[in-house]
Image 1 (cartoon, rainbow over the protein chains, first blue to last red):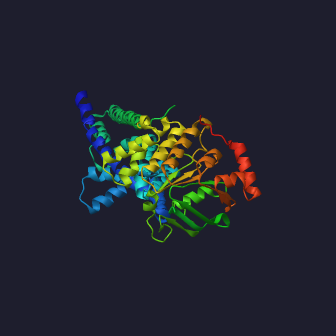
Image 2: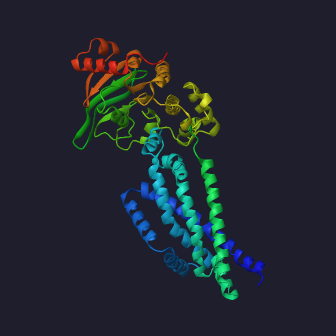
Image 3: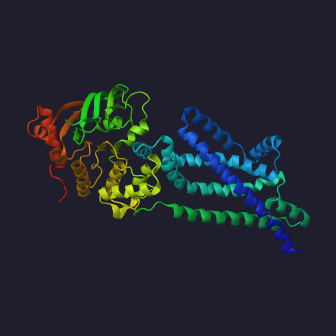
Length: 214
Length: 254
């Protein structure tokens, strides 16, 4: 067996894995931010709807949601499995990211809002210029947890036939009869991606930290 | 005769059956410093918050510069630009430098171009003596410095009146003097101010008028001389005596 080819075959799925993550994670972030703002500042009605959305989305296994969303999306629009899978994962992640950002928004003291209003800012301006910049900083540590989860959950799109790392490991393990080696390789690739991402986010957290005397 | 900047008539605030204050009338003329004193829990902070519409009063009217700001449909954000507010706990924006704290209202609310906003913000910082702290974050400043930045932030909007809500109560004693000094200068420059404070030295020296508020009612008001030396009510005398004892009539500044 040609080991170089074996590893290369699996590793070339990394582009898909990274691609799925790079679509799903920001998509979930933008959606999660919007939903969390509606949850916290949108009044009783919207808040209730967001709570229901969150409870349902977090109560169903991601793979089941992936199938449901995939067939909903691809039934209506002609999308490749890669895109449909990525966006579906992003929607799943939005519920978790909404909860992360909601917690961060709530932990920015309410008096910051009062101070912002006192210089004539509208509610929207205060949320945008005062609350969100502080909340997003607070959200980085729990968010890096979610980033790791999305990287790992990107493996679920293998079920849609996207030739990412896990899918390729599965294919080559069948053709070479080397399942252990194949899945170990896949595992190491996921681990490396999660490890690097967490390192980068740690650095980002430090760089964005608000300076203060000890 | 000086024009009233702030005119309050029959202002009442209650939460359910709990009346915070009732039927309050206060007039503040241009350039005057009016000091409100009274035991804690008598609605002094709530009163200030009602004046810049952060809290809604249940009844009564407020005129700012002859404009009834409590009138239905009045733009509250617009009103607050003209009413500066300084809080007990400073409430600076934690993620912004001292300069940006002062500047953000100019650039986001007044929509001034960046350079103009920055220059104006610097002027305000120099007014409170903190140009050399412009790049510091609130977490890197002492309480006294934070409060001075907060004053600069409010001043930057060119308010018609400044409201101070116990501006020195959260400060260590040795930091009170620098904040009072800034306020004293403001009064001298002719800024109209309504100040809630326990600093009797400041009240005696700077105030044109002192209002004694207790249990949601104005017990007595008058000039510092009248209030300190010949109060009409025994209650006023005993409160002033007690508060002077507690906080000292002398200030901690050198």
